Length: 186
Image (cartoon, rainbow, N blue to C red):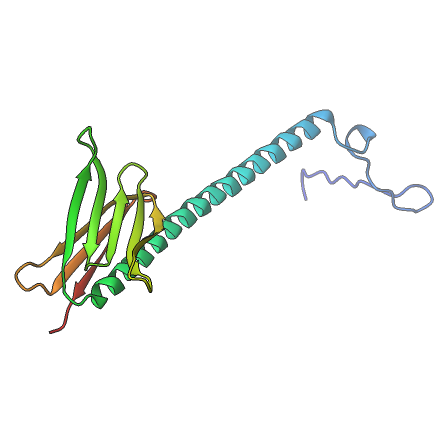
């Protein structure tokens, strides 16, 4: 080949043993600049990974809270549906009781003559009150907390046919309204 210069780097010493070439400047190891740069890159990767894990945890917690709230609302709707279906006469009434300042204090839903659902507008807690008569004929009201964080509850009855009841509950946790429709067979 014309004009090409071929260089042969011999890595063997005089005894014929092959020697490994030395690192930069004849020293092995990392320089301070290389160490600082690799530490900075590793720090950025770790911070990004940690941020991703934290975001995942927050999303998981928010979804768990929403699912728990929706599950509680569904359970209340199922209980209300059972209560309405057990009634001898169909009649659900929606009343709002006001406090002395004119603000809504309680919203009550009377289902039949024995069961009342009461939404405390201040604490946002929905309770189910059931009247029970003991052996002596004394009526006791038994209340149990159903779910906290309820913004609103509505019961709408079709007044013409008296066969359809719509129930809607709006939860505070995710501001979604869950509804059900009950149709009575004749």
